[in-house]
Image (cartoon, rainbow, N blue to C red; front, side, top):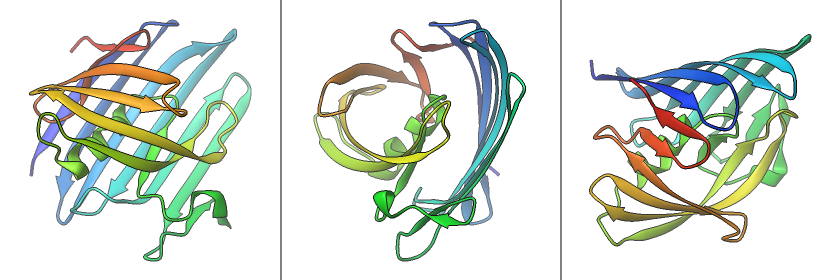
Length: 184
């Protein structure tokens, strides 16, 4: 079994996140725990994203709390690319391959591993973006360009949002400027 772990420090607010990715039979499991502050509320979120052997999202679960509010999200994707959030189909994200958790750098791993880009190559992807703190799924157009052995240029929102991501050998983000950095 292959396992990689990481600990991030949030740069824009008090908080930390620990994540682990492991191969379990024919699937990849990405699991993490976040403890952070958001607009005066203490937040605790746990997540698990399950991908097939080619790094396509199959299902995910996010649970925890934001202040006094309980959070529970169950996400599934069927073979036809239809996404469901807590049992309800979300047509706006039909056909997306990757789940992007708005509150975590962990899910950048999914397209990085799935695309397998060589240095200088770029690819556009449509992600099902789980917004924070609304926990609604939206389509988010993204682009990844591999700029070095351990670096990617990430763009979204029509190239209005751009960051140079540093990653480790497993593909986990080690530095996401202005938001997260690995500390262990």
